[in-house]
Length: 271
Image (cartoon, rainbow, N blue to C red; front, side):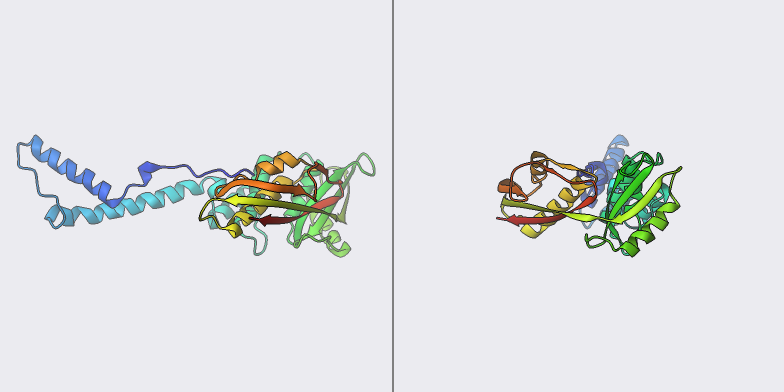
């Protein structure tokens, strides 16, 4: 999915100095309203010693409040808060699964109408099974009720027939109606994306490559048509000024992925 930038909440980003200054201004305003001499509030004075630690505590609590607030939103949740979103959506974390791929699966679930038993449902359910790296599903390939799910292992390689049967057993619990369900080892559609980037000063190539890999893999999910210009648009991230020498499998044409194949990405980035 496209990156959703965390909102700026300046009201929750006050420094202890800013908070203390507001407190000091209130003390001065109260004294002036009473016709009294304003109290000394500079560093080292009694009011400073009393109120500055309180200002520090308020600042820290604001940061905690901001963190807690963001955990309520799936795109920014992490850790046990992300697990809570998963419990609500009915998708548990796989063994050893990190936050980012787990969050991507949860967002995909949240954006997809589940339960009608169409091919996309079975692909999502298959990807949630431990050990499955990728999955695609084809509807009505054999008959009007057939659903054929093609899977790869966690390393993006075609699954073994034995593992495919294990996944089919897991999907049987989800199967809707009279669907004729098969789970089969996918063949791999090798996709090589090559590009030369012009980076901003200070940008780290390894970090940019990791980000682009994530963005392209997100784009590839469930697609049979890989559009050259759409993938090109994914290169413009923070730190990238321009790009040249961009090819898909050595060319500049759109590509079609057969329904029984799962894309395996090889991204080559140079500067």
